[in-house]
Length: 379
Image (cartoon, rainbow, N blue to C red; front, top):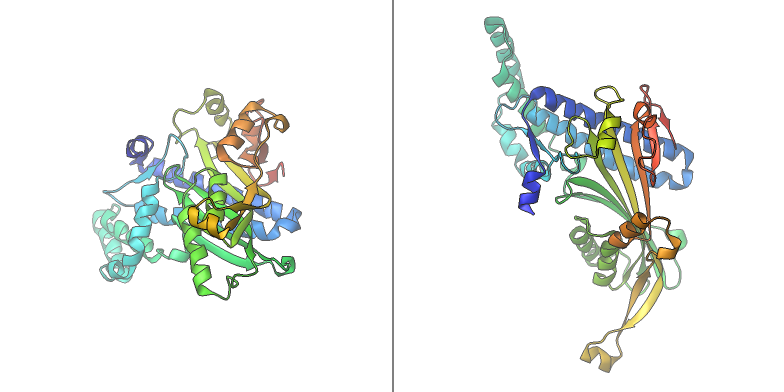
């Protein structure tokens, strides 16, 4: 694991490359926000979900902006990215932010006053006729520390909001929705989760009972801060919370993103089409939605000796799994089977200049393109 992660990461030491990378990611996120804004305007039934996605994308943008300040004039440390697989920053960058947050106040107290830094910068430039690199680093570090706001950044685990879907309650259960997001240490990519679930009516409502709510949140954090197969996450929640019954789990994988300047070992067919776009727009951004649906609840008799005596049963969900006969394409079935998912939808975002030349690439994906004015096509 550690060896794999070491190989699949690269330090960006050249300031020009660093600026190009950050600008490319900011553009990609801004286009992604436009995509979901257009979808929100056209599909009012999914409006709330689009709002959640936009909320997490904004967190991603804030995090990359913070990394821009951290490394802009840093003369000793350099940004680390995953060039081989995801195209996103290496997980150690998220770890660094998360480590710094508790010490924000202490570190800020050690910084020079911003007025003094600016005065020194002006004096240095007048006397030396060159950039005051040391003071620029101090100013950049100050901006980084000031931006260490946990609730505005995308960290390893990002809790969301629990919502009681009151109009869908019954005599046997309450229906809720919950969302959260994580930055996975293995894939170096961000993921957004949506969960719709029932809670048995015999249990105290989650919104009224702190013990029940804490147990729910603990399990979600433990199981949802990483990305095994999507079906494994749904099943783990179902098994660990006896009164909680997942009905729909949706996971959005944001990435990978491939670019001509910051990706290694990509297919030649992909590498060649990237060159049709202008520099700064030479990227292809993948989005994957994985769904796990419940087909209904089943009562399972516990096989333990004491449970046999007490005739104890547990209610578990039966999740829909792919049927080879109903799936078009061997690769798609394999991916569904690997993810233990009921359905997978793929989208690929790219500049229109690249879209004109992709021919038979990305046959199992919906293509979304954008032009120089930022207008979105393909939705």
